Image (cartoon, rainbow, N blue to C red; front, side, top):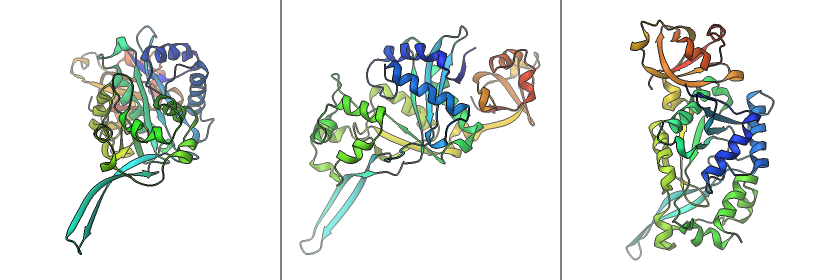
Length: 343
């Protein structure tokens, strides 16, 4: 039975191996031992309540029956501090001259900080040999179960960033047309710096005035809001949860940024809290598979397993209880659990 749990310091070597297997492109999971160790330590402090909410990051990992790490996902509870979270917003401008009877309908990209202070879902990554097994979907939805368990730790609005389109050589046409003219570095370096050290240099160097889309080359216009093929499945999962695209894009690669109100996320909305009770063996065949998690942040666990909701109870088997952290299935039943009613 596969289980999603908070990352621990002992996971750092496996996390580094995962990052190395992913290759370049995922700037929030660099193949850098020191950087990853810092992320893990912050997550451990966040789960233990030893860090302020504005600085809290919650990293989760998925392990298989043998304890091998299959992937990771994360929640960044308060993005943009202290310099702001930067986006471009695509807006429309209609102008008309009555004197000559002419009109102009154009689109622009304008710099925005609308997502500052929101919670970001990100760093969804699975080992190449685990793709297509449901691992990514389980890791993605486990984040929303954490939100359902402790909504007070997260902002009223959640956002997700999709990696923007790149060609086979890793080049981004928008960066070549715009970003490269303001930053004396290539796209990969600028993107990595943003992920590693924050957005202060973005605020200092990005153009402050709107960018007229019609003045850009066709290749740059065509990729605005277009996700990288590798990110398209993640975007579909976000949209299935209720996230929507409303014209916000990343300032480097113009990949789409999507958002959803915290309490309207499908998994959060469909989840219910209850007290765990034994699942009768005779009832098990009729119990569909659901996301089940512990209701305690300090020992948060999520798994997908047969379960049933009845009144205020959540019926689970002993194997599920053990997977969620109970040694004999009894200890877990002394505290609430949470069930996602539609798998």
